[in-house]
Image (cartoon, rainbow, N blue to C red; front, top):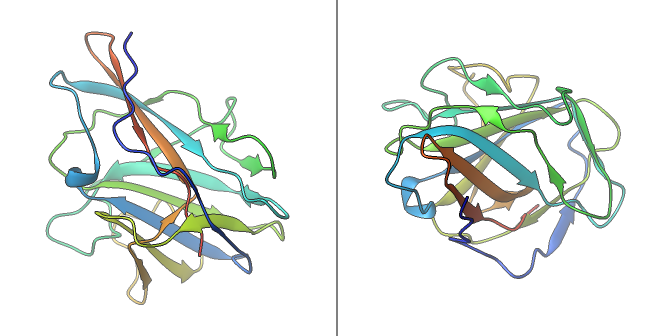
Length: 185
């Protein structure tokens, strides 16, 4: 297998709390990703952990972005991302947290959408502002797995919350890595 760092932010700068009861959606335009020529069969996510308090994610999903539709909508039923076989994950204040490999055949032409819901009082995320071809959205309520989300999502344009790395596995077995260092705002 070959790992390639396609995008890297050397610093993440801001902790942001008060996210209990919110769905956050991070949208990556295809221009933000360096993708292999082979078909993608699996993805793996790495979240950058906040430097204060931590954050408990009740559920995390990945999917293709809707087109047409709102940038934060999925095109079809998203795939749940697991961490050590569990649908929930607790992000501490130290090392990054990496998911299990998730079976997801990313088509390489749609926006790459990641959504999660925070249901715990441990609700501090880390982010970085002004990231090209990346946007984040938020709204109260649990819509992490919802395909066509409700109106009223607030934009955090250009901000990358939590996502430090996206890895893809191809049918040929090669692995390409796209690094995004977490941005919380």
